[in-house]
Length: 142
Length: 142
Image (cartoon, rainbow over all chains, first blue to last red; front, side):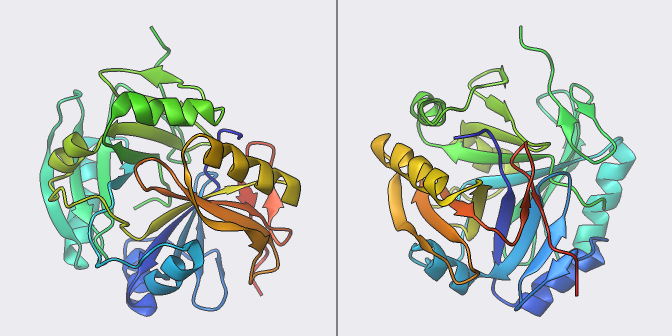
């Protein structure tokens, strides 16, 4: 198995509401078909689709919406940007579960959950390189 | 907010077991620090970390492990590759929740859950371009 993540699909309970939230954060849909929104990001594609349909399609029980143990990170170039994105998400109805603050790894970050509970850490991590497309470069091992 | 997903962190209940599963699938750790494994993929970084620590760090309740409405997709170049990856995952203890078969979107895919229940669709989708690094290229709108 090659080392790649082609798409990340977030299940949403209300498609229009879910899409509007990401658009309000500044994202724009690259391609849309049958109530499925594809957002081209840094090599990986973020997809919004009905949580119910996604559960059926994946063959998993559609348990009550909760936290499934996954967090997405969106790295930015400064502490100011962390605060800006967190305030933007809050103003659009996101739930801020950790206010922006210094982190144990020597960075600065805040966390919000989107309207369906998906977790986003907005992080400034001086220990990682940050590329123009938002991807990070890990430190060299050792 | 820029359109990017820098990292995807999967919470694991047993770090060594979780890491061994991905290594058995053929992934190799790019950087490791304090029981946190970073796998550099196609621009996005996949991270394994204690689910309990991740919950605390994200400020979310650590609900009983279940499905949180997120699916990761790993696209490959052929139906044979879909079957190979699914069989590999099964042989390493992954739970196949959808056997490889033709999909409603005209592709061919199967789905497995890793040892912590995280959902991976292994897909061959002739409607998307597939790049050398495993990223996909979406169709042109319209």
